[in-house]
Amino acid sequence: MAWIDGTDAANEGVWLAETGEEMLYTGFEAPEPDGGLKENCMAIHSGTAVDVPCNGDPELEYTLCEK
Image 1 (tube, rainbow, N blue to C red):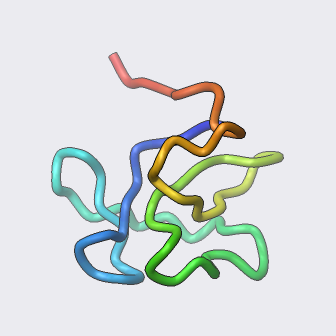
Image 2 (image 1 turned 45 degrees about the horizontal axis):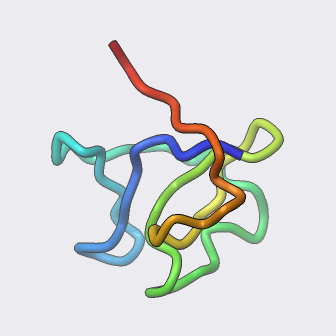
């Protein structure tokens, strides 16, 4: 699983990149996103997006970065 820079912490269900631009990604794994207010970061798991806690979840061992 890898964190991919999306968060909906400011407005539940509206995913924003670190730049503040809205992420219009719709490839969430069913039944995701399902974490409500406790899971506000986006990660990739098995090729699809999931919402996860932003507090250093040990499963998020890798971070993808854009250069």
